[in-house]
Image 1: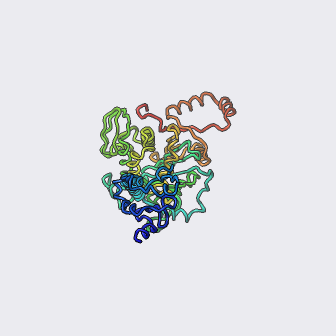
Image 2: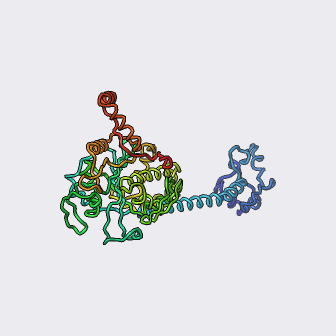
Image 3: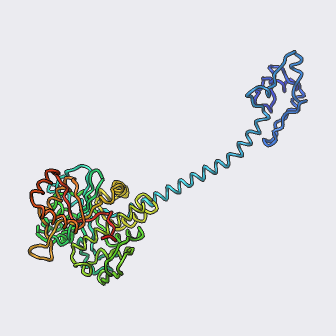
Length: 466
């Protein structure tokens, strides 16, 4: 009776055959088979069933040739299962550790990247006051002429407050624009033209709002006084009134930002025809080729009285050539395409950068730099607006017309301009004067709209060949 109960319930150790099913096509196992088929051992001991424990007589008694489950193709026997499960379990820990390690590296990289991004992004100072001031005077501002062209006003502040106090006294926090450059980026991003505006240029300065919320009167005065009177907004409105060009963005950079950028690219190479010893600029350099670090570069672009004829015009030309060499150094060394080398440059630039809300994020600046990185260096041009000594005061400047108006019109309409070295331009002017009007007319018929040419330089120029 006990044997009958056991047979009808099925073998407890055989999960593939539940109660009531017989592994041999309905024939029942002998009672003795229940004793021999104990539960299988650990997965590490996949022993097959002993031959004499396998029920053999059921099929023979009925005259049937019963196939063995182990011999059926594609059927896995119970003995095989422990072996396969053991191998799978041995592999899984390694896969889990590899996946865990990869996930950890991804998290660390993403965290580091996010931290660097937020750090650079947080370096930038947003000039909201200028944006608000410009909005008040929106109706009087020029209308953009060409879509996708960009006009950016770059202002080098000569403030002596904070970290810049070592370069001179701070007169109550007052500041003037030591360097102002109108940067025009062509709509197709195949050229960039940087026009220096002399700080001594006599211009019409509109009525501007001061820092203590007072309003200045409209005046005819020295250009860089606009920055002192009404800050960035007043300078932008003065440039727009002078040129008729709509300023899309602005950047204000101080001394330390310039120094750090030069150091970030491991210095810039120049060549000197004669030694420099300028105590005001804290600069002492021998003649010949040399690579300037940040501090030396700042002295070089600021020096005035001890270099050349001491004029501000010559200093601007020296600044333009140096900026061209800086751009060339960044492109030739692959700085713009190498994140490892680009980071120090961005860190240095953003630390001392104040921009309008349209350029106050790292993404905005990256998009701007990326749009410029394919501009050929010979198409990154630098020039000074056509100027001459002011008739009322030889220590001030005034525009040369109609040359200045023609330049502003070209930039406003996103048309090309060309620059050549000053001596080459003078030679062309002499040839033009000697040829006379008949040839001029003939050349105009061949080229109805010739590209205006100005004295200047490009980023492709070698300072050691000047």
